[in-house]
Length: 62
Image 1 (tube, rainbow, N blue to C red):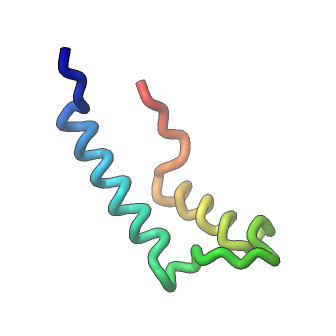
Image 2 (cartoon, one colour):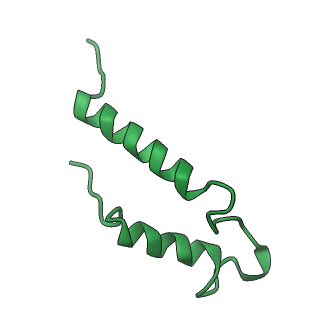
């Protein structure tokens, strides 16, 4: 038995890897700063808001 991703799953994986590489690139605002990492204007919250704006929240596998 050979188990593999479908072509669509492979493309999604490539798209997500590229998206997160851009999202976490230097200068993207995602650099961690421990003193306010989880605050409303901190990098974590900005990143989550960006994920939502870009339509990547609420993805369900199925």
